[in-house]
Amino acid sequence: MSGWVAIAGLGPGNEALVTEEVRAALAEATDIVGYIPYVARVAPREGLRLHASDNRVELDRANLALDMAAAGQRVVVVSSGDPGVFAMAAAVFEALETRPDPDAFDIRILPGITAMLAAAARLGAPLGHDFCAMNLSDNLKPWDLIEKRLRLAAEAGFAMAFYNPRSKSRPHGFARVLEILRETAGPETLISFARAVTTPDERLTTVTLAEATPEMADMRTMVIVGNADTRRVGRWVYTPRQVR
Ligand code: SAH
Image 1 (cartoon, rainbow, N blue to C red):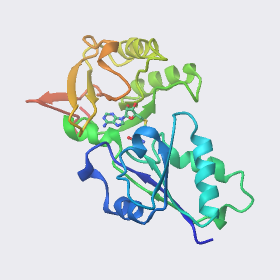
Image 2 (tube, rainbow, N blue to C red):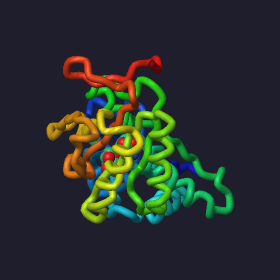
Image 3 (cartoon, rainbow, N blue to C red):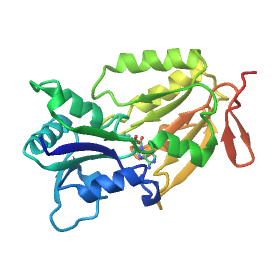
């Protein structure tokens, strides 16, 4: 098979944060596949076909990419941030599981800078000690599981990074998340809202859990909750490497 699939991360938004490896794959591609706003970040050029699709059709997109690669095309599947973090890489493997010979495909995963790390860098070093990452959307998992993981992570003293914190279709979930965190991590714990990081719309806000309101987050926001040691130093937020 002469075609290939590269599953690439475009980083958090700023062009300077797209890796050289991803740029090279985009330059060689015949076809780009992805969610509309991510495909829009790829510069059009002659001979490059753009296949932009709406949200929630990840498996169709993955199958399209595999079929085109099988037909000899050079396909880049684009995600924002990193493709392995709540994004297209797992969807391509899900599609690959249904194919008779998975190893017949030439597949590469090209990492990108995930929103969590870009947000942490803008805030200071809130993830300087042990942390976990969660997707707060209940599209693909039961809400009860989200609550359970939140409680256990807070009890274990992890700092936490939340993707997809709040959307119009799920207006109440994030209010519940804040309630649970106030109970388990305590009202004085710091919480940061990092919106549209590395883009011209960037906005950074840090408050205590007692002061946090659901409206502080939307679908362009990364939420980072500190642990008991997380503190401010000047305008920065950091979590010391050593536990008190
Ligand atoms: N694969 C992506 C995450 C996809 S989930 C990555 O690795 O970054 C989409 C969520 O990522 C958004 O709801 C938001 O929580 C977060 N996100 C993506 N880009 C962001 C940015 N520039 N600033 C803040 N959060 C961002």
